[in-house]
Image 1 (spheres, rainbow, N blue to C red):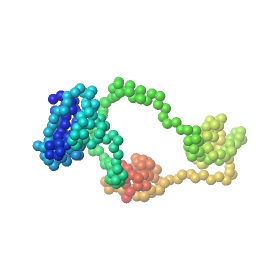
Image 2: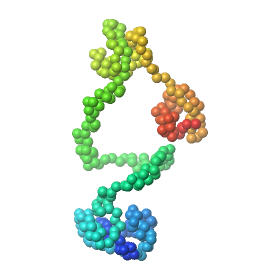
Image 3: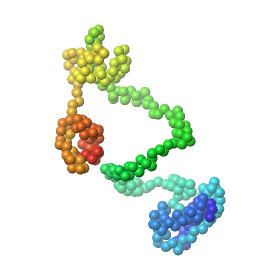
Length: 294
C-alpha cells in the first residue's frame, strides 16, 4: 500500500482516533488487527475500545502518503491537528517518543514498588542441558563485524576509567592499612619499627619487601623474609584467622553434609566455592550447586 500516515477510527466512541506511521501501511494494519483480535495490543485504550465495540466499529484509513524521511514530522503534524478535533487513543503528545515528559504518580510508584518487593526473578532456576546446548550452538562462531569493532574501539578511545581524588585515595589507603610489629634483620641488626601501614612500608623499603611475606612473618607463619624476622618480646598480639565452622547442608538429591569446623576444607573436598557457601549460611543465597541449609 505504501509509506505514510494512517488512522484507526472508532465510530461508536465519539470518532476517537489512533494516529500512526509506517513504511508499509498494509503490513502494519495486519499487525494491528492481529494483536487486537488476540487481546494484547500495546495501546490499552485502543484494546479496551476494540473489546467493547467490536471489530466492525473500526475504520482503517490512510491520511497521507509521504517519504520515509518525513514520517515522524508528518505524524506529529496530523496528531496535533486531529487531537484538536476529536479524542485520540495515542497516549503521548510526541510522535517519536510517546512517553516523553510523563511521570508516574506517587500512588503508581508505590504500587510498582509493592509488586516488585521480594521479586527474586530466576533465583534457583536452571537451564536444562538441552537449552544450554541450544544457547551454546546459537552463540558459537559469532564474531563482531569490522564496523562493530571500529565503533567499539572509537567508543573506548581515551577512556581512562574513574579517577579518585587525592582525598578519596587517602581515605581508601587509611581504611586498607594493616598495622605491623617491629622487625629486625638477622645479618645487619637493622630494625624496622612498628607502624600502621604494612603495604606502604614494604613498597618504600629499599629491600623491596613483599607485603604478603612480611604479613606471614608478623603472624608467625613464616620465619623470615629476605633476612627480616619478627623482633622478640614486643607485647603485640595479632589475630590469626582460623578455620570457619559451618552448619549442616542438604543437597537437592537428598545427600547431607553434617555440621563441621572447617568450611574451607569442606569446599575444597566437594568442589564448592567458600564465598558462595558463606552466602548460603548467611541467607543471602538460596543454594550453591544444589546445596542448601539443612
